[in-house]
Image: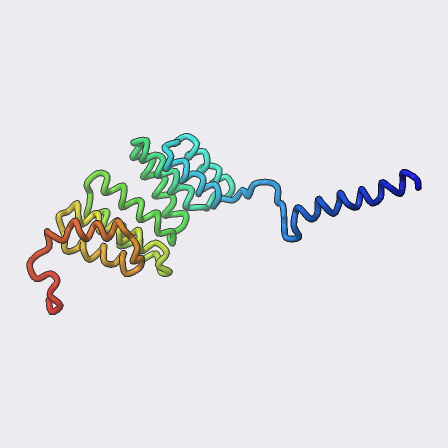
Length: 198
């Protein structure tokens, strides 16, 4: 028997082992997915980690991929705010509102900006506008939570408790809202839990 005949079964065995070890459903995709959404998500992660320069670069990259992507402008506003650059933060968030009037987080973050300078009534107006611009209720949990925290800052425990309750209607496991209700419970007026109250 020649060497050529011996090589064929060895080659077939090697191919079988390689294919068998991969499995029939194994799919390998090379390369990164580069979309405005992934760049924005990466920017948020970097912002949370305190890496402001790289966060800014990710948000700017999201804008390069889609100049009308309002979330990227909101991200840039968050970076500017974290740096203490209020004017730039306002400029970015206002541009985000103009770019996409239905992007509720632009109004939510404007409320956060107002709260940072103790303009709580203005913050509440922004949160209400966020609710108005969010017909699918995608952002209501965070909006009501920010409203509740604002009412707490204003020493309005009844409104804070009710806003925390709105969060819990939508997300029963939202622990910060449960903790918030416990915080304000002692400041509620007598009879607040009376089922016949106005």
